[in-house]
Length: 406
Image (cartoon, rainbow, N blue to C red; front, top):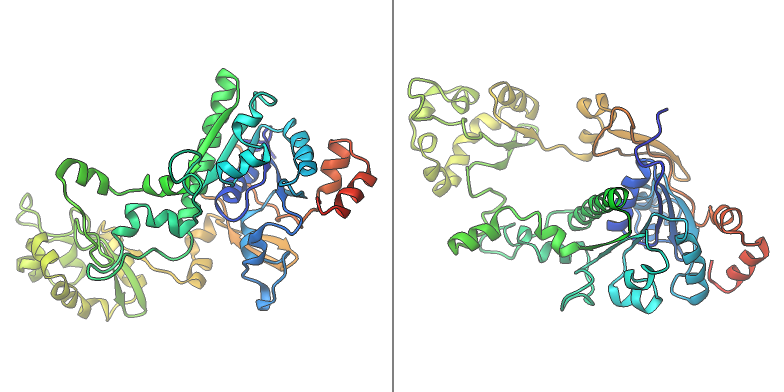
């Protein structure tokens, strides 16, 4: 097989959870040699599950197994001096150092960018933290929910007469992971072109805020605050999820879905979809403002059609009419989706939890394809890294282990 795109990159990663590990998963699946440095008790994601049969096992956590493919694991307590000595020996052979701690913690450990740059001038230090390495909030704690709360994405989600909502899962952490990965790639490119290391300082809150959908621009340009509008997009209504005969569909007519004054003699795609060309004469079809004001009545007018057609019928017909409708699949539906199957999106890896189907790569490369190998057992590379690569004796590992460092 052709070498993968990042096969000459070496990464040492002490981050835990989601954001940092997701960034290094993308690096590892692209061919980088990623050494995951876990505390002696393991990355805390090992305790989060889900677990087969709901029986907790640190080697069988679905979250850990998904986020740490293609890596190798070393256990090391980097909060103590002897652990920091070992880590710095590893950094001497690394291109990238990924960490998920606040600036004050890294400074206390002697592992901040300022502490490392003189000894490792070509090292890229990639740091992800709730609020970044500087500023009044730099020492605050936070997580994915915090990041979404600090962005306008959460403020604009939910019912207008209720509190803001966050979408399910951990979107703030994954957004931060993608942005950290991009920052690392940019730093590697700069080093290749100009030489020298770099400090990639990634704030989870800022990463989520960077996904802002022109809310800040609206306020900056117009002084307008965009309000929550249920699950609906306030512009271009409808952009919504609606019930159908066997589930739900995303209803997005787009700019050309309804009658246009530029084509007065034509039948709109929405009227054709709903099998009633007379709808083009109704106020709801003629005016987006009418639809927005009377959205309840508009949705009620769509229900006779939606409730008697399946999601597949609706989406296939809508797409044929160039309307960007979509399915709202369950996890089971997603795993059996024929489109994703043909694109080989899901991958099967052998783990201690048994054969596991995991989401595959978010992009494909024709000449240097990505590939996920199973996530490592805790500390499974201790001997390979410390003895074979760094020159420690096996007796040294026993001493470090007895002291709780490994």
